Amino acid sequence: MPIATPDQYAEMLDRAKNNGFAYPAINVSSSATINAALQGLTEAGSDGIIQVTTGGADYFAGHTRTARASGALAMAGFVHEVAKNYPITVALHTDHCPKNALDNFLYPLIEASTEAVKAGNEPIFQSHMWDGSAVPLEENLEIAKEILPRLHNNNQILEVEIGVVGGEEDGVVGEINDKLYTDLEDAIATVEALGLGEQGRYMTALTFGNVHGVYKPGNVKLRPEILAEIQAGLAEKYGTEAKPLDLVFHGGSGSTSEEIATAVANGVIKMNIDTDLQYAYSRSVVDSVLKNYDGFLKIDGEVGNKKVYDPRSWGKKAESAMAARLIEATQQLGSHGQSQSI
Image 1 (cartoon, rainbow, N blue to C red):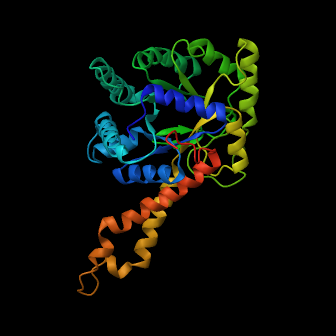
Image 2 (image 1 turned 120 degrees about the horizontal axis):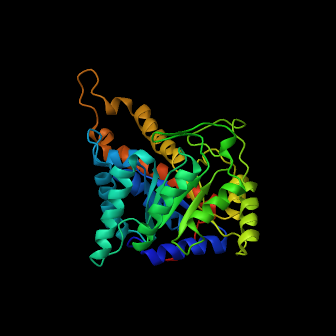
Image 3 (image 1 turned 90 degrees about the vertical axis):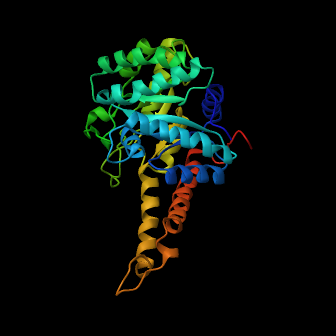
């Protein structure tokens, strides 16, 4: 199916919140990982979100170039075309744009969608993330206030991060300390700055012990119950529905099914899936090489086995392995079988 229109995307997010599930947001960095994401979502019968970071966009543009806005547009162009071949709906999103990447990543992409909308077309991306977790909250929200109306004019959605996600994601580093837990005061400041939808729709990544990458059990304590406390506090203060914020779950690798279910029950409608999918893809490649070592290499004057070292051979297996792990994620998030086309 074609990429979601802004109205379809809004409907997707509303349906997730109303029905108590979340969409997987898959970080991609190549055409192969895009194909794996579309395969996995299709086999799961789930709609989803395909997203790219600054580093992923750099890689799309060519690893010897520094042209991340161009790389992101190339990624979007590829998805716009190949998604037509799949029976599910996907939205496009840019993930983790820090302050030093606004001018060469987020702002050019917003402008590209502005031009597309002026020409009578849909925006290129359906949502964008401004990652202000590395700057003081006041500055974070000031920049968000500047970005939100620009996206609203394009019928796009903003994602903000309130609090700090530990670990590292494409150069954005967060220490593992008490700042990993957002409090109600921070959430109130967010609503005071950005409103509750009247200034434009936004999603909020509140932190509750999240860490990017992988970590051993016990190193980090996830407290998804914080989300319920914040939602209830906002609802009481502003007289809104029970869960006024659309929430995003970052840094979820290693989370238990119970932790994910609690987060979703408390208003998470989007969960980023990256590290686990990277591992599934790369683990398959390693498996192919180790089991077919003599086919990959020209040993003792032999010629190897083209059917083995042809990238399509091991690439298909890697894509299917990544797709299989994505299917598991849709089951944990409750989006399995939730495609609008079903």
